[in-house]
Image 1 (tube, helix red, strand yellow):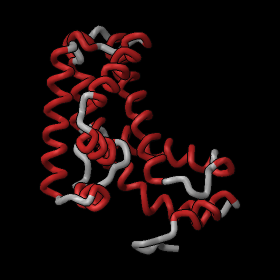
Image 2 (image 1 turned 60 degrees about the horizontal axis):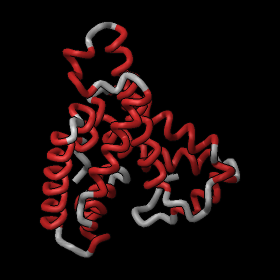
Image 3 (image 1 turned 90 degrees about the vertical axis):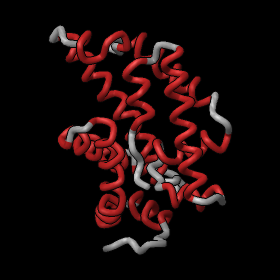
Image 4 (image 1 turned 45 degrees about the vertical axis):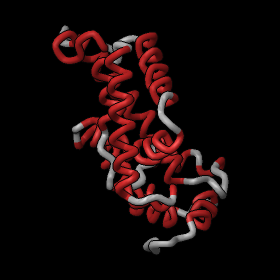
Length: 197
């Protein structure tokens, strides 16, 4: 069962809630590559990115009965993937610390403990808040929902070049904010993932 270009996502969600494995398979085929590219752009590891994909779709299956029929599934998947990537980065930093390598690998921006991790997340959110509304919207649509630049342009009613300008300025602003506030390597990782254009 293939999804048409303009498929009715709500129909597949309704069928998924009725334990329809074919609907789940179709949704997986439709979205898994997008989630993989999103995760790989952060982690630079095929096994880790594949694990993120599996984790996201396992959650979808396990929570299928609670999903709303009008849930924007693509956004839900990318939000789930975003949190999973942050957790993976935190685990990686923890393992590096255990092996005495954190100073060389992550410098002063280590997020090995929960307090530092929460501080980094707060710093990320604060940087987001500094962006003008259109830039912030474009950034979140790209990084957290996995939309391409043409998709963002269509949603915002602007040209692709305008979206590219929004993204370039948003990344510049956020990187500067992280540098000024000691965000270090994790802050850069949170902004540098390359979304599909």
